[in-house]
Image (tube, rainbow, N blue to C red; front, side, top):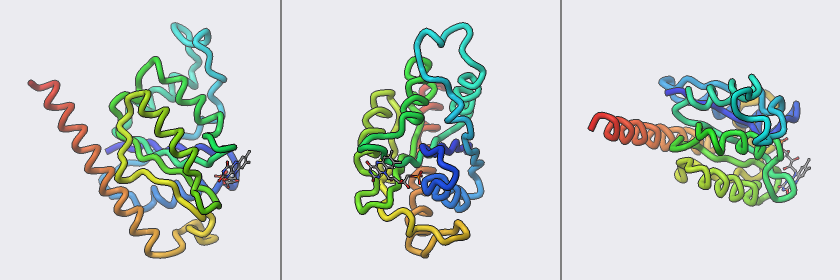
Length: 188
Ligand SMILES: Cc1cc2nc3c(=O)[nH]c(=O)nc-3n(C[C@H](O)[C@H](O)[C@H](O)COP(=O)(O)O)c2cc1C
């Protein structure tokens, strides 16, 4: 299974990016994980820039999505919404459809006790509008995010490890189920 991982933060010492890497490190061995590194390079979306001569960075982004069986997003909350760069990345694929029927694990991480719940809800709303399969059993806000990791980037405690091990199992089940439905639709 190919998993594309996207952090909604461009910050060098981002908690969301660090958490995402810790989560990827404990992914099941049958998953191949790829971190998307060009979120900040996507131009501001305009339908006028899209079409026959879409920017190469956009084409690479769309291919990365197409090639993946599932996507994990871990995002901060900015002013009770999602960061503009993350929303911009969604806007580039509303029309082209690479996210359609893609299972997605939606995480938001914040130092607050709310865990960026409003960004989480906003992201889920946008993804659902794009016909994404938001896998609810492994999608949740992560409160007190800075306490979840040690200085070396590993999870701070076993309870957190188990939360994400379980999230991976739920996600793998959702991806398998989607693969089965796809096969059923196309082999009928
Ligand atoms: C512009 C800005 C707006 C923010 N707004 C919120 C917010 O609405 N809710 C929240 O929980 N944290 C908010 N924060 C704090 C972020 O959760 C915190 O900086 C977090 O570490 C950012 O994620 P990152 O470490 O992955 O970059 C905001 C931070 C910035 C820079």
